[in-house]
Amino acid sequence: MALQTANIDVIYSQRSAPYFQPDINDISSKINQKTKAIVLVSPCNPTGSIISNEIMNQIHQISKQNKIWIILDKAYEHFEYSKHENDSKERTESEIESEYESYEGIISLYTMSKSYGMAGWRIGFLVHPKSLTNQLIKVHDLNLTHASVFSQKVASLALSDADSNEKYHSMNHTRLNTIRSEFSRGIQRFVNEFLPPNGGFYC
Image 1 (spheres, rainbow, N blue to C red):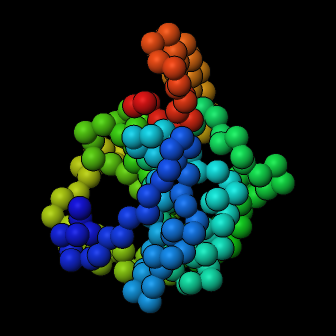
Image 2 (cartoon, rainbow, N blue to C red):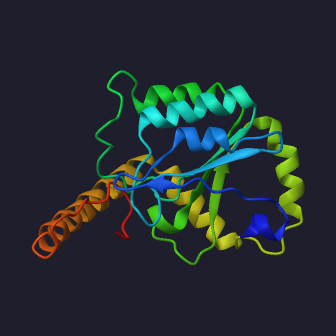
């Protein structure tokens, strides 16, 4: 919506059931000289699908070949329960992320509202190449709203304690995975076919 308000054309690529993975051929066919970025959301809202490592790598290669940005929306990064069954066994997620770090064309977006239970605090952060810093500061200076100082300090404290972070996310993951399993068993009593979501907390 924000992009459309800025008069930027947004082209959507459909995902097909049951796994709702990005269609590589469809994405490639929609790239033209005006394309600036590919936006990916994983886990996805509302399907709960997680983009497989294999498909993520293919999109990565497409972006490099066409010299366009990848914008990763990682709002639900700590709500992943299981990977896609077709994930490549030869390339781990950490290997792909390591390759991303050497590529200047990726921006990752994060929010504190989901993973840290800070909904309504209007606080988040992004990870980007250093080459973008000055341009992002210019954009931020023109924002009509901003995160409060209190929100920023609490977010900084939450992110700086690695041990507490790991314990909190592990406990929350176990709790949500239990809820997911119980819900899945319950709903299967009433429907003939049901595919449990791989991520998120809204499916």
